[in-house]
Image (tube, rainbow, N blue to C red; front, side, top):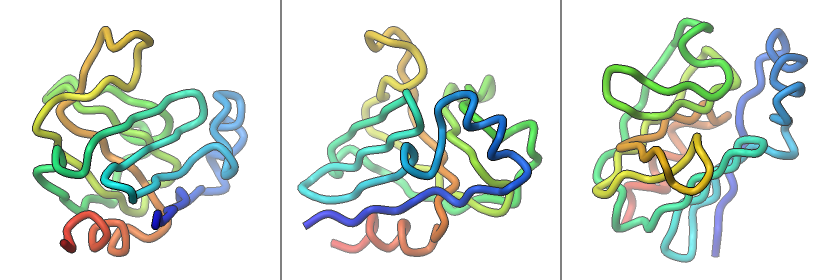
Length: 127
């Protein structure tokens, strides 16, 4: 069984995100069947649940650091953001491809601004 977690969309940023192909119908996190899958418009992340080594709540954020797809210069992580309210950072044992095609760039973590961060945290940390 899989559980889907939609992203929280701040109305102020919806038009800009839509230009990138990021809409409520194309943005979600799915946990189940031994894996976690993130879709953020044309970007995708897929990892085995066993590779998720940490789940950290975050936010609130500054809009210029979170809205849209972002690469963190501090740690190489990726952020897929649709809201400044709150999010969840997933850290991986093995870095995952996300921003560039072909796995050219791999990320040790992904931050997602889902509508219900505590529920996503529970789904990823409950055995």
